[in-house]
Length: 215
Image (tube, rainbow, N blue to C red):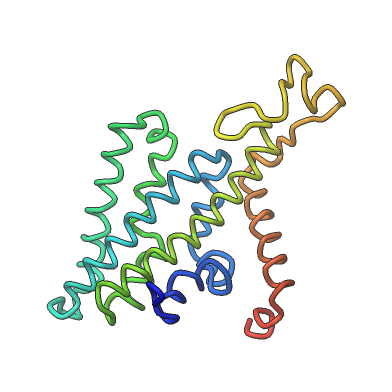
């Protein structure tokens, strides 16, 4: 017997492909542009959103029957703000330099359209278990795009991954630099993140023609 039903598996798998929050729903673009010049920052942001969205979805689901409709947005903001504060404090305690790099952007998780959208569209109308799966799926779909963009930008822009030189040393001219390779500094600029996301969208839609018809 499968651990998850087909419907429950869809909650996790759909946002990773044909209903991705960034490439299909066009949500969360700001962080994809702002923090993906380094793979490490992309991974940390992805994990942060995974924690906030999955836990937040469960909390909102548990409270859905007692939240007055007139103040539901305020309640959602309080829940996500509390979770973001936890993330921020953990980063400051265990990765202080990285927390300074992400500083403002961690705080902006509070207004991330993906998180507020899933609270409204799913958690308020479903049980905790399915809300948790929905949070995992959408956060994973968001994080996958961030990691792909961060990987591409750091590798081609700096010749490094997670800070480690993987293409050689540009100063000592070793590795690929020995045959004339040069880092593409444009990859470190925010507009290039949008171009990389555009390429991902193009590849995704070229593989699935129904996405073009639906949009």
